[in-house]
Figure 1 (tube, rainbow, N blue to C red):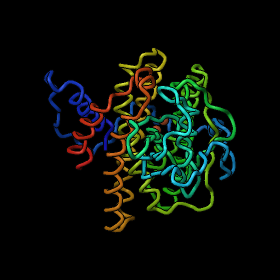
Figure 2 (cartoon, protein in one colour):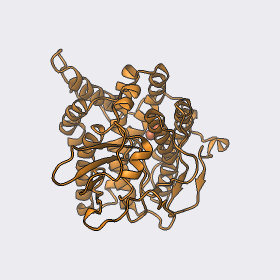
Figure 3 (cartoon, rainbow, N blue to C red):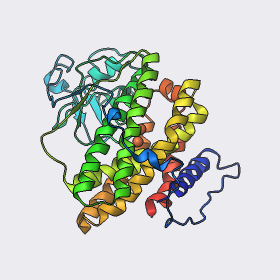
Figure 4 (cartoon, helix red, strand yellow):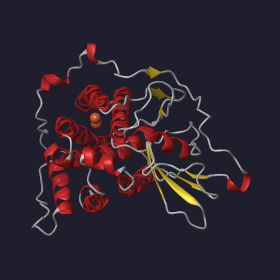
Amino acid sequence: MTRARLQLLLSSALFAAIAPACGGNVATEAFDDSGTADTGKDPADTKVDPADTAVPSDTAPSDTALPIDTAPVDTGACTPIADNTSCNEKVTYPCGLPFPPSTPPTSEECKRLCAPIKYSYGAPSFSYCSLSMASGDGTTVYCSGCAVGRKPGDLLANDVGPCEGENPVGTALAEMARIEAASVHAFRRLERSLCELGADGDLRARTRRAARDEIAHARSTARLAKKYGARPRPITLARDAAPTTFDLALENAVEGCVHETLGVAYLEHQRAHAADPELRALAASLYDDELDHAALSWDLIAFFDRHLSEEQRGELRAATERALDDVVIEIGRVHPGVRTALGLPPREVVEKMVGTLRQTLFAA
Ligand SMILES: [Fe+2]
Ligand SMILES: [Fe+2]
């Protein structure tokens, strides 16, 4: 898919979601996908500088040790009930919360309240959370751990190392920087697999360049996190098993075609609406690269398609649908201060945008 067509679809969907009453007609004219995509970059830029391949964060060996001092006490009938369905993680406290949180809860309070959520690989760390109204069934804490970006499937949560700041904006930026750094690993691993699967040189070069882009993104995002008093946590990867082709196809569909693609639309909104001029500039600086990464994801769909069974293709479509649902849920849980500072679109805009994209981009 050309980046121009992708850009048009995303911009049109965002525009239609923001200003439907102001003549926001969605442009749907066909684009020729057969030509070479104009990436706006120098072809020589596809060469990877070996000096530029270090992940800008401490990448520790696999470490599944988890902090245990933050877990709520098991009190029988009052045991917290954790629900970790995809990005819809939540914890219900049948007998009320174990402590009175701030309004809204701080990052540290969210970590403690969301601590009962565990996966087979360990416990994710939740930077934000929100509370439901207390009811007869207790109080529910909605935890937010998903970020827009290409998060590798073997990325583990890790609370050891540099601490996040208390400022929610700083915490959000630190987590963004961590995911950007993790994306370096995702693209490098993908490039190795593409080589083994016999992918053409163009796909491999674009994947290598994406890894290099993400190094720069991690650095620039971490710099701004520091301005808000936060540092990204180190990356910890599970290195126990090599991903299958299906694993990589699934990661590409969810992290690339959903999260990185919608991330482009978010960046378009952010570069116009972020309260902090430096955050507007950050969004503008990431936009072109992320558009490249999103276009690459859609081209990889066609590549992986040849290596999958019909049943696996069906699983990919279902996972994509779930991920689109989760994106809408997730944006509604972002801390209001974070949304304003970063200029993220509100839930109703994302919901409309995703609805339009389901009929255009994701229907293709
Ligand atoms: Fe990035
Ligand atoms: Fe990216």
